Amino acid sequence: MPKETVLNIFEQFRQDIDEGNDRRERLIKASRDVTNISKKAIFLLHRIVLEDSTDDRALARRAASSCREKLSEANALFALMRPELAGDRFWRYQRQVSPGLQEYIEALSLAHYIEHDALISYQQVQDALSDGDGRFFTLTLSDYLLGLSDLTGELMRFAISNISRRGGRLKASQVCAFVRSCKSDFEHFTPHVRDLSKKQSVTAGSLEKIEAAAYAIAVRGSEYDLPQEMLDDLVAQATTRFNIREPDEAYM
Image (cartoon, rainbow, N blue to C red; front, side, top):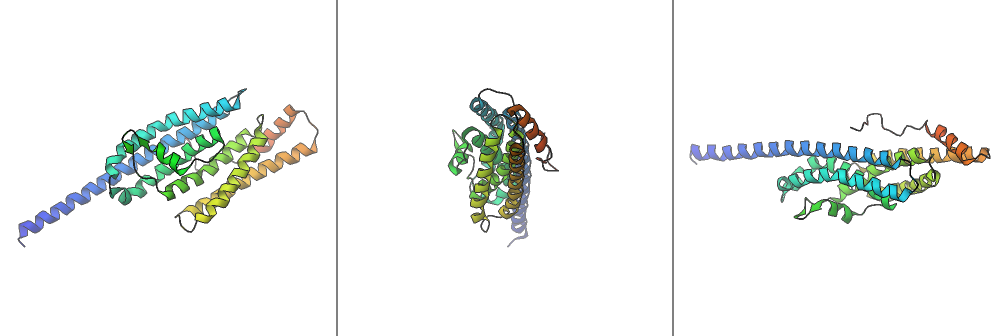
């Protein structure tokens, strides 16, 4: 084979490698941007549900709608990723996209739970990752499950933050049962989904905090025959000792 032909072949290899590296860097940056947007959407949702309202369902719908509106910014980024992930390239770069996608699913599933008191389905998440031109990319079952596993930590924060509000103790009990059910169901998938076992340990910690808060409230409530307003004050004091944020977690 002539030397010039060999050089041309390796020149093509170089171009392919450079294009792959550049594409990987673009996807990593886009995934980080999606993560930041999703965290802001979660923070927005938590802030709205803590507002005073006489209609909790209307407040929940407004919070979920605001969260989805914020997530539309992430959808725009996913749309830009679509040509980068066309065909077999999705599986080559899936791990670069996965962190942002999991955070997006966490925010989307939290909005869905607050509005509907139910777990968002795989198909509903896939539909959210679409526009008029079709899917941005295929949602893997592992990303779906890992995103939902992260949801349990936000539900713990939601339950404890709201426990001193009107109806908050009942809501905390419902969230506790829901998180317990999620942990039990996800356990079946831990041998098949990478990193799910690590997230299960975090879920167990979140469940423990909800149970401890609910137990503290039940004990306080049984000790005294108090008016509702004074009991709510005791509840607020009892829940301040629970750390509902991870040490390294900060919302932008």
